[in-house]
Amino acid sequence: MTAATQGTTVKIHYTGTLEDGSVFDSSEGRDPLEFQLGSGSIIPGLDQAIEGMEAGEQKTVTIPSEQAYGDYQPEARQDVPREQIPADIPLDPGTMLQMQTPDGRAIPVMVAEVSETKVTLDANHPLAGKDLTFAVELVSVE
Image (cartoon, rainbow, N blue to C red; front, side):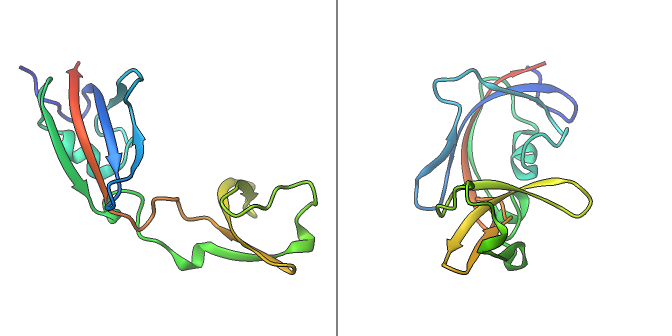
């Protein structure tokens, strides 16, 4: 059998859970996720965990936050005066929006808090600061 190595194309089925056991993502009911190992298309810790696996092999791994979506960065939260946000933009906490950086890049932000005078936007990935557990089945290696 061929083991998954950097540069090979792999297909996996997976279920990702948080420390409390809640599922945040899964390929259940969908085609397997296909990607090139080592290409940076998945989080680094999962990429490393799959390396060396063979087709048909299953394992469960816990990926620390620094090898997943990074640590939570308090400085990635920004207060914006409410009057600077157009009235037609939904501001319910949890709503995902896009901000534009001074150099023109769009970055996703989540509405964290809303008051009469300000809106707190959070540019952290929703899974930042969380250790993630994945049940993985390597379907194929090409």
